[in-house]
Amino acid sequence: MALTPNQICELIKLRALGWSQSEIAKKLNTSQQVIGYQLKKLKAQSKKIGTDEAFNTALFGGIAGAAAGIGIVTLLELLKNSNK
Image 1 (cartoon, helix red, strand yellow):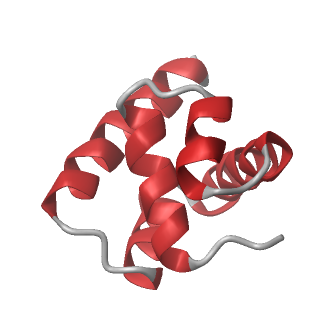
Image 2 (image 1 turned 180 degrees about the vertical axis):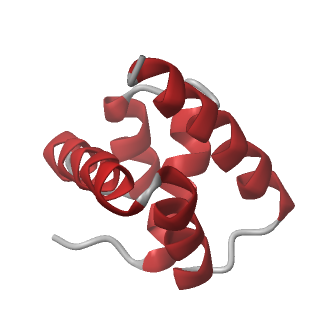
């Protein structure tokens, strides 16, 4: 099952807030495998085209709002730290 752009924005926001894959899956009414796959895909995309561009693409795909924007900034920092 593919996630909608709005669900991807919600996934990014919730992950940045520290939610687990299983918690996000329940919130988005999908499986933990779908969430894990999407996170892996976003991380690979960020390595390929750059973190900022990957998350800008995710944001513009489903206008997220201010709360998600804050979450994305947090997630970007987490990804940068995990690549060190």
